Image 1 (cartoon, rainbow, N blue to C red):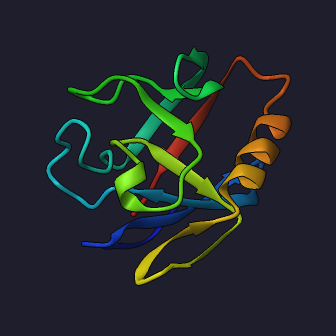
Image 2 (spheres, rainbow, N blue to C red):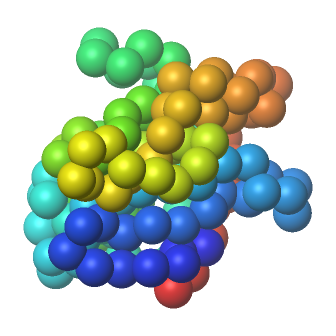
Length: 125
């Protein structure tokens, strides 16, 4: 569920099995442009992949006009590259807003999905 959209990014929460798992950060809304925009609201299948850059993770599949949208570690909108960053909480790194404790949040996310090859995610505004 998205909580806030603005030039600093698109901030939200990721719920698994009805419980908040972590906070999220996507790029700002920029018309679904590859690598620089959050993805459109909708229901998507997330499939387990092994990323050459981020290792084991999940890819958000079937986003119109987009591929390789991953859940991964990072703190600021510029770290997203069009993907979804996971964090334990919102905060600041210097003057910029972002997500904090990303490594721990990402590890907990993967642990929670350890038995899953795929899951559905609904992105709502």
